Image (cartoon, rainbow, N blue to C red; front, side, top):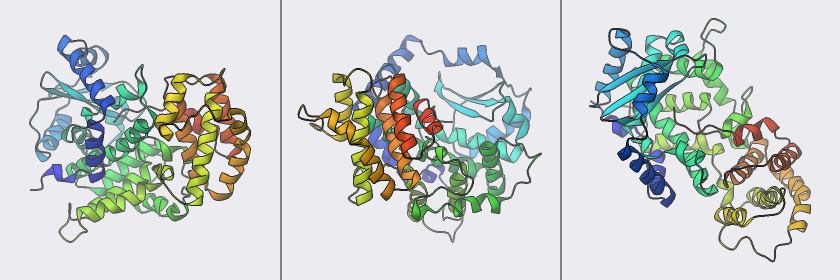
Length: 400
């Protein structure tokens, strides 16, 4: 029997190791530990007051599914299942409290998903626990009073995507039914329960094949703003799971785990900020634009504060913000740098710049209305929809 811990994405492992050694992450975990000691979190108490606990008598089949996943993933922890009213398809696993693990489901997902699809969902949520994803409290860090520096924020969002890939593998391992897994992700992506569309795995996978990754272009019909959120775009997740299903982790004659991770990295490459270190003309144009745009945004609300200068240097490097910088001249250069970027980059690459600009803006814990206006002006100039700005400034960062 396969050790389920070996299913975990190598990129998930590497990034989580890096994050657990980060000083900011360590400080947040220390604060959470103190709250737990004082009994201030009360996760179970909140669940009992805001949702319904599904006992084995109330939801026998769901508990059988959960027990089967617990066994297959070689976990040994008491499990409590909860349901909350919601029209959205959603589920979540909460970090254990008092030796018990909690899994929550929206009412809609339990009513619309088949038993095989629910098995994938349960396995996915348990995968977050199996791979210790809750040791990195991304929600606390990204939404706390003291926002993380932009570099840490980018690493967190990158890790989050690979954490979802690992959890998907745990869910697929439990389900052992690629079609059901893909159908579950189709429902999550479309919001359809199946009454209005006949699901086709081949057509769903074709959406990924139509994404011209080598040219950096999103696929036909794919909402481009979804490419840069913390979760991988659903057809990408299905493609990654198809690769997983055909690898040696699931079949004897498939490619190795190392080859699998390289293939998945290729799928995810558009979502990574590689231009920050790249040496091409395109990367240089993107960096120059981000530098000038970040200064323009920071200066939009009554000048650049010491706090904003600190954030700027943490992103671009020590001493990158100098008193010798001509702020007005750099701001005046933004249109020319936009034009240069448009000549050399694709829409998704410009979206990377806007995403990182939003990340810098959020790093000091606030984005003023004027700062958001400037970001939207630059976004419009780059032919990036302003909806993308709004999504990144208000993006949810929790694992699910």
